Image 1 (cartoon, one colour):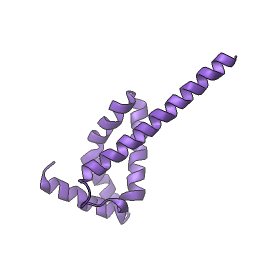
Image 2 (cartoon, helix red, strand yellow):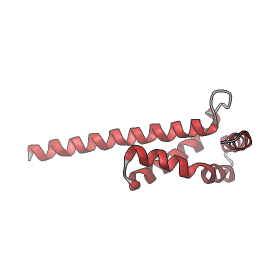
Image 3 (spheres, one colour):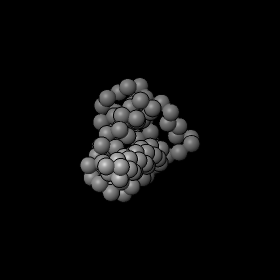
Length: 107
């Protein structure tokens, strides 16, 4: 990502922090394919990755004010959110699968 693109994305995230819906649409358009790829690599299932991606953008909507361009690039910050959400989902799925296995064993 070039300096101009990075600066543009940072500005759009600032606008999202001000609850600008058009800015969120711009952030989505600029980043959704990359963030979807992050989620899909971790989860391995398209449906789960799509669900997590929705959670990622909801999280961005609520937490954009926490983005600090002095600490990280915008895409790094966004990819970290996607990665963490996908890992959380993977853990939850693992727990559900383990619970299901225990239930099956007790039957």
